[in-house]
Length: 304
View: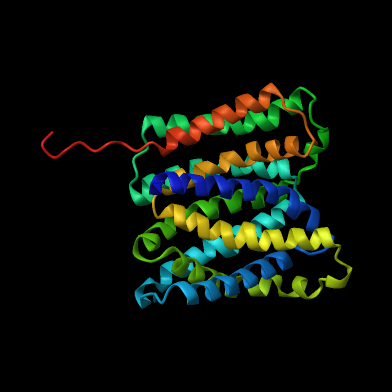
């Protein structure tokens, strides 16, 4: 399997982890853990895991002149990204959150053009448009047809705004971290980004972290907590970093469109929902959009 294909497989797995996270995290907050306290444990434990793993697989060190960029990545990719997402999800609905997150690939594509000078080709623009249409089709049309419960209207404006800020910050993180990925090993980058992020998150989540009653936490909730720490944090950040070694930020962000599709597939697999033609059409549009965004322009030989 070549590196490009490996990167796409990895991003598909990341999309699946995120899709499940919308359901799992919402069940935990705020009854058992406050959103900021959740992020405190998430970042703190993940930081320890990254440093332990890195100690066994690499001895790479970072250069002092790169500290400002690592701090920038920690701000956008850990502190703002995670705090705004979990606090926003705590206030709004998973459906609203998934709709707003579809703005991320558009933001990344624009930022890539402005900062990394990445060309926005007509093919990529069409791919982004297909992804947006597919994601919105999956979520909005069933509501209009009365297929879903109308509880989706119980979203919160402040929560929706926080999710949007999260989408913006994650897009800036993907752009900011790209140069570091080209210079260092993926695990080296992530362990330092999380270390700086851990310092930033500490004052916001410390109080809520101390309020958690672990003895009263049901087994399934604790398993959900472990899932968020291990799969949605440790594995997702490492796998995203691995993919960034090969693919552009706009391609990585395009996989966000898979989250509502995979979440729907999960519901069908668990027997909570029946397969509908809307879901098939939306899935086709999303996969087609991801494919178009990921197409690379072939370089002509120098003599042509």
